[in-house]
Picture 1 (tube, rainbow, N blue to C red):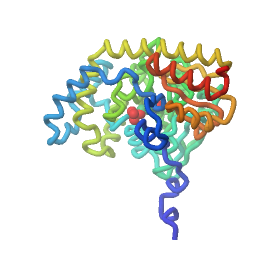
Picture 2 (tube, helix red, strand yellow):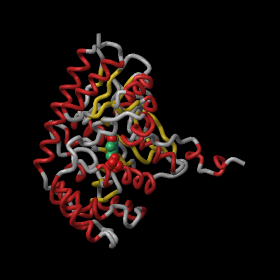
Picture 3 (cartoon, rainbow, N blue to C red):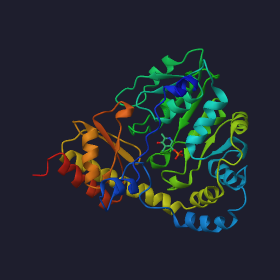
Picture 4 (cartoon, rainbow, N blue to C red):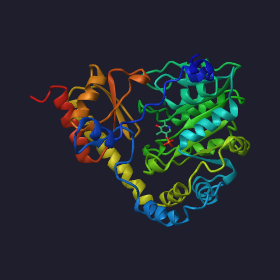
Length: 365
Ligand SMILES: *Cc1c(COP(=O)(O)O)cnc(C)c1O
């Protein structure tokens, strides 16, 4: 007997999510020092001082369960985003709310649509519950909304769209998404995953669309621009009835107390967010200039990362970079075997990465 035969059929065929290599692991396995990690789209600034202070204060109450309703954080989010707290669902990272959507609305026999090269968590949450993932072909590495529309059938329950998308950094204009929402049947839920929305130069008020499109769920996170990836806190904004259903499948204490406190503080720290945006814009320019000097093609990105074509076996380049103490992200599992994804770091980190890449590609001399 194989336990694979016992598992839910989708689980047996799943590949586990491959996270960025932790710094300590590289130090342990390769014996290299001064490691820099540009592999998980983390904020290179470190956490905001306000968030750190909130965590210190909150940690004194660590013996108690968190507020299972997340009152303070929901109030802060509702206030900032002009919606009712009843429309918000908190998660242990936004990955958690993506899973809640799948569990609440899809099951065996149902279809869930997402794009080629889209975020790896969509197939995981889909297959884990025995639903069928339907992949719409990408266009220029990005989401092709026409192809996604075509992929919708009477069995489709959910469509996942990441905007900007990870790992490609591609982005769809708000007007196009709105036109798409107008064409999607109202009994199909559309999850608009906006994990990188804070980095967009032009901020579109997508949250206002919730009034017109009751099947729309917008997810956001504190892991990226807000710099709290290690604490695990994200949220969904939706119609209150949808939020009520998500709440039924949610673990009662899925958002921990330190994360809730830090998120409230981070939301109020506009300076930090502004600094994060500026360092990201500057680092993006720095990396692009470096790629152009190396004559490497890259996918133009609106996120805090950029995916570059190294024109060879990217797995080898990735490995060679590890020996230089630089961790980036291979994306072969996203159907991009020649590309590497690099998170934007501090100026000195970006420089070190470019120097290491130049050396590894043998273009230094
Ligand atoms: C990083 C990321 C998330 C956020 O994950 P968390 O669970 O909130 O840390 C969600 N969606 C996409 C596309 C991402 O890249």
